Length: 155
Ligand SMILES: [Fe+2]
Ligand SMILES: [Fe+2]
Image (cartoon, protein in one colour):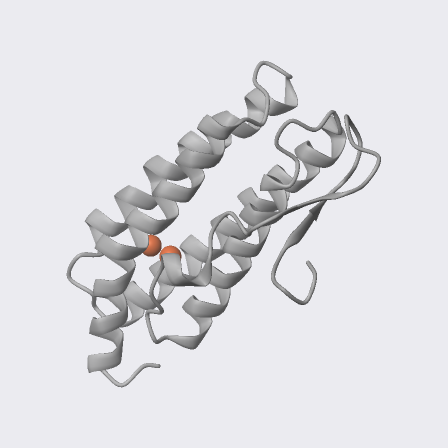
């Protein structure tokens, strides 16, 4: 990423020169939940989705597989972090929030398997689904968790 927040797309087809894109998910697209560990992990997820976005249309299959698997691991760790906060602090909506995590993780795992088997390609449908899930889940679930944790003095 350069100093203006643009990411460089590798010039592996059509272009002799690198093409610059805006970040796919911008900081202004989502809110902070005000719990440092959760916000740091959300930032990491966003960075990895943005990096993956740089490879839409690319023929670098192995890099795409590596980045998607890396994202899957980051999201798995992040779900465990949030679930630990929920159980340790008796968060009442634990089960519904955890169910959302589990169903999304299954979906991501299927995407990962299909990418590995080369049944699907990294395309904008896949990117849009990553982006909208991240933003909506944060808005309707993680922010509630953040407010609750803040109310019991966790920041
Ligand atoms: Fe969550
Ligand atoms: Fe989250």
